[in-house]
Image (cartoon, rainbow, N blue to C red; front, side, top):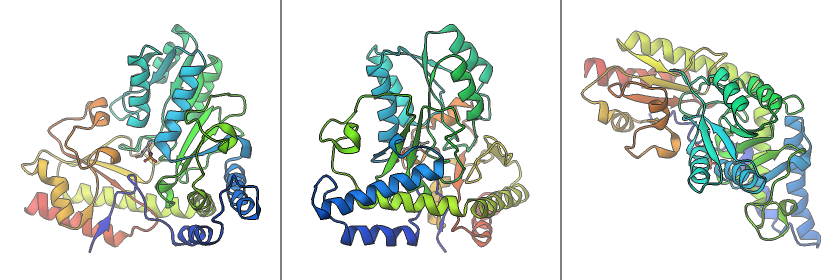
Length: 377
Ligand SMILES: Cc1ncc(COP(=O)(O)O)c(C=O)c1O
């Protein structure tokens, strides 16, 4: 048996998405910028996808810009807005994804902005009182806070952050890479200026995503070139990727309640089994279903001699999981997120993350292997 519990890193592509992409790859191969019939057909694929996504999120199609994924969308929001529009102060948290943190830190180093970090507690919750103070005591700010933390699953109350940003005339960028397709975003209500999607986190293809830019906001392009994406992002569009992204989001929204119930069931079941199987086990981040993304379970194991080998041993046992952020898995650099919540360095942590394709039998298999390694081993 081989179990894939690393769905926060990336997800398997849904068969229906594959079919939709294959159809476009085979038939709508024109360049969407060409004005002839082949080009117009490809253009139609893109605009249909944009309209479908906008409909699901209750926004206008003109507010969506296709990108190569989450990292580019985060960079586009942060760099284009901050460097070109005179905002000199940014606020983020120490546990954001590196797509956000490294981008802001580079701007800070270049002297383009001054960066402040809002406090987080031991479970990864944002200190909203501290955020309010930072907004009150600084000039107009750009706030970048993610919806659900990719390592911990802890969810930030982005309605409350949006309200605070509105009160202080701040710009709010929210990295929603982990919640898009798993959580119903209603952009007619949410007070957010930028929001981000990467298709590969919701059973779509890799290398495609979007940036939502609220119509009240103007930015300059980050990638200059042709007039694609209404002059905001030069380069021939990833037509079949965009078709796959829209299909993935349609499937996710169509069956979200059913998938949530199934995946939350697996997570709760695994927590219970682990607590019974391994004395001294604990969890990093929030685990309450109202405060934690149902796809992510970050397990804090008691100190063990095989700490350094845990992920490797899991891999050998047929289990794909991740220690720390997806993007830094495979390296032995400590997790900035676990450092940020002051997790004990003596306790090895493993992130298990689930999808609609996972089963209880897989949970039983994984917990059994962990028990063999840590308890009987
Ligand atoms: C929260 C978050 N933001 C951004 C990214 C980057 O997305 P992409 O891999 O599409 O560039 C990831 C990917 O792990 C993520 O989890």
